[in-house]
Image 1: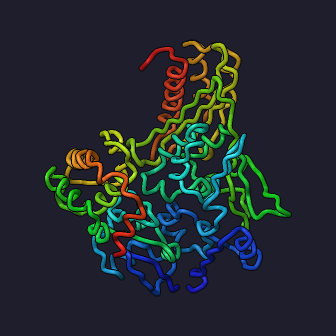
Image 2: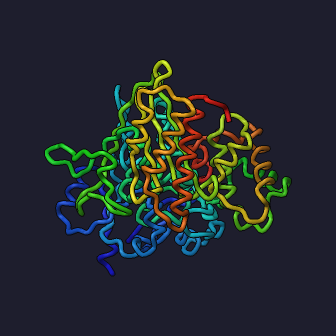
Length: 291
Length: 169
């Protein structure tokens, strides 16, 4: 089918937006293609391919400002991993990117693709949630992008709020207070390298005089969507962490998550292991004992 | 669609379907048979090539993104000054058995060494070579070969420009 083979390779955002305006959807936006090309049916059916890696702003932008970094949706993970400012100020993001696939995948895969594909197992998503990232959605209207939080974009496995003519343009991540900051990103898979997550957990928080000032906990790959665990966070907030408090938090996350059973894991495994991963993170963070 | 790109320093022009995989273009159309299809899903690394200076799995690169790119396969890397040393290390450590994964491993080894400023330890080699699967050796011998190679300063940090420059000649 010749229609399937229409390809657009816009050089900049202006050209991209003009192509979207002048053509009839559906469009298939392509960045690193690492998910798209292995989804054989979807790839075969994909029509009106629009390459986002050819769009200079989306492929090149890694703009560090005083209080945030703005990353183009089509910037590969490896560039994020290698950026010295991001390494220093957003180590949790670097850790998540490093745990996504192999170096060959990191050289192609992108944050924009991870978001737009909306896989429940997307490893960057819980991290973007605890970092309170702003997702800029194009095309911009009168120079303004639509801005959403990560948990507002995904509506179910493979489903997002993105309209047929919309694409992820930038991911803006604020730099957070570093005084007293603690963080962890853990991924549990079939094996340590390359496996799709059975579950992952991102934790970002601040400790002041031994008291948890604030904490954000988000799981991925457990349920159809990523989930912030606000009731678990509540248990830990403004408290001095000890074994009893951590036990309460682990009990709460067991109740708070609603895991699915699928080919990678069962509901009970996910419930149990999420609580144990949280326990491990909190014990290590608060140095209750060294494992 | 008509695409033109550079493979191992030579300009190539082809008429291909935009969704054709770079792997098929290299292996079938250009007869660069070092590029192997293992899993076809981006997991095994048997089809690894250098694409615009970075190692990628060529099974996950569509033809339309190949247009205007620069690709180096094992056939091109063979022209590198350090290639003989890499070949020797793999042989001497017994890191080659059936050989199917080998071109991908060598591509990843070259790319890995290029970014190294100091000798590598085992953990680092395991992480950086995790995208290449080998079903024969059990990896130990491959890791030893790469560790050995990372001790040789002239193999590390070979600048990209130097790689393509040499290959183009």
